[in-house]
Amino acid sequence: MAEAARAPLPEGKAERYAALRAEIAAVIAGEPNRIARYATASSLLAAAFPDRFFWTGFYLVDEAKGDELVVGPYQGTLGCLRIPFGKGVCGAAAAQRQTIIVPDVSAFPGHIACDSRSKSEIVIPVFDKSGALAAVVDVDSTQFNAFDQIDQAGLEAICGELLTRD
Ligand code: SME
Image (tube, rainbow, N blue to C red; front, side):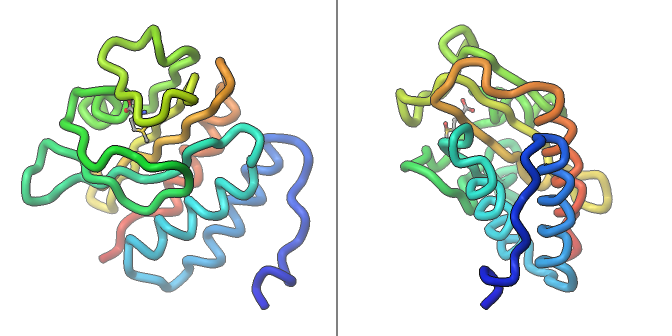
């Protein structure tokens, strides 16, 4: 059983992200399917931070539309299915191709409230090996101001492991 073989995660946040990065890389090694990689990452991330990560998942660039995100693998309550580029935090991160941390979602113009319990969030872009945007990772918390630079660095490093090879 894979679960029984997993080592306990470190207590420190940066150390926990480093261990997660190694674990995700090991599990997805050799797996060419991007949905399999994203599903693995969302599961391991959500399980690693159960107190802070209320919704953890991916919005994929819809290749057919080009300027719209469509929901991908996630852990959490029901998420909205589609987000146009530029709309909400996910759409803004996709349009800007950079990480956005929002300490209080009620203060973010155009925030999309899929679940009113979400109070803060971080969204990180995921690029493919050619540098094109493939997806964004969206992590929402029920606490205000739940995410900082350590989360950004840890999640951006993990997103680098998810480079699309298919
Ligand atoms: N928080 C997002 C919407 C997606 S859900 O919360 C799952 C946003 O405003 O981009």
